[in-house]
Image (cartoon, rainbow, N blue to C red):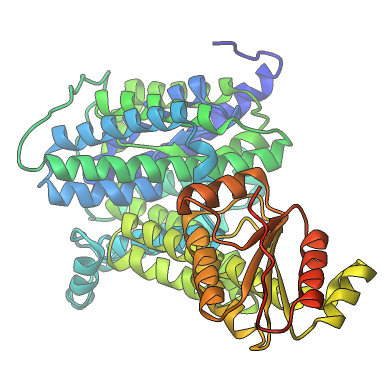
Length: 544
C-alpha cells in the first residue's frame, strides 16, 4: 500500500485534531449503541485505521456514526444485549462492504435520489435526539423510538434536575464555544472535560463507571441459533447504510480538496475496517463528515491523517481510559443531541417548500418511515417510489412526443405528403429508449390520436435505440388495433437491435411493411393511396 508523505506535517496536525474531536463522539456513540464506551473507542480505532489504509478517499476520517449506532442500538435490544452476535453482525457487514466494492456497487449507491437521502438522514437525526431525551432527564433510555416517546411523559414527571442542567449546559457549550479556542481545543472535547469536572466536584449524577483499558480481546464470529436472521438482516442494513454514509462523506471531501475519490475502493476499505472492528469488540463505523472536515481544515490530505487519528485514540485507551469512567451520561447525551441536530438536513428543510411538491412528500415519507418503522424500509420505499416517479416522468415525455411530430417535420417534401393525405396517413415518431412506463399507455395514445378515416399508420423508430418487452408488446397491440380497424401498419427507421427484437418476440414483424426511414414510408403510403380507391389498400412490402 503506497502512502503519501509529501503532506506529512498537515497530516499529523489533521490526524491529531481529528482524533481529539473523535474521542467524545466515540465514547458517546458507544454508550448509545448499548455496547459501552470502550466499544465506541475500539470501533473508532479499527474503522479509522483500516478504512484510511485501504480506502479510496485520501483525507476521510472514519469511525462510529449516528446512523450506524441507531441500527446497533436496535439490534442490541432485539438480541437482549448478546454482544457476540452483535459483533458478528458488524463483521458480516464489513465482509458485505468488501463484496460491494469488488462488485462495483459503489457507483450505484450514489444514485439514491437526494430527497430520499435527506429524509433518511433527517430521520436518523431525529431518532438520536429522541433516544437522548430520557438520559437528559436523568433516566435510562428505552430501546426503540416509539418506546422512548411513550416513556417520555413518565420521565418528564420525574426530572433529575442536576442531570438536565448538566446536559443542557453541555449542549449550550458545544454551540457557544469560541472558534478561536476551537482551533486548540474542539468544542465537544471542551464540553466533555468541563462537564466531567463539574460533575466530579459538585454534582451527583449517573456516570459511565469502570471502563476496560488496554488492548482488546478477539471476538470470533458466532453462527447459528434462532436469532441468526436478525444478525443477517442487521448486517445487510449496516453494510448498505455504512456504504451510503461513507460515499456521501467522500463527496464532501472531494468538494473541499478538489479531488476525486474511488468509490469502490472506499467500500473495500470501509469493509475491512468494520470487519476488524467486530473482531476486536468495536461498533460499526463509516465515513464521518464532521471529523473529515476537521481533518481537511487542519491540513490533512492523505490517508496518513486517518491512520494517525486512530493511533491517537489507541494512545488514549492505553493511557487515559480510567479517567473516562467519571464522564456523566448527561454530558454524553448533550453531545449526542448535537450530533443528531447536525445530521438533520436543515438546509433542505428550509427551502423544500420552494421545490417540487413530490420531492417534499417523498422526503417526508422517508423521514416518517425512518423514525417509526425501520431504516431499510425507509430507503427501499424511497428509492422505489423515486424510481417509479422518474419512469412516469420519462413516459409522459415520450408520450407527449407522439402528438407533435406532424407539425415539426423539417422536410418540406414530407410535410407536403402529410398535408395532402392528412386524413388518411397517421404518423407517429417514438423517442427512446421506449420505457415500460410509456408502453403501458402507448397503444391507447396512438388509438385516440389516429383519425377514423386514417388508412395507413406509420410508426417511426428512428430515435429509438432499443425496446424492452413491454414496449414490444405495445407495438403488437397497435398492430392488432390497426388490423381490426382495416388499416395498414408501416414501420420505419428501425435499428438492427429493434428490428431483431420485434422479429424474435413475434416470430415475424407485426407490420404490413418495413422501411429504412420515414421518408420512404411516406412516399410508399402516398403512392399506395394515389393508386388505390379508399378502403381497398393492397400495397404490401415484405420486411427486409
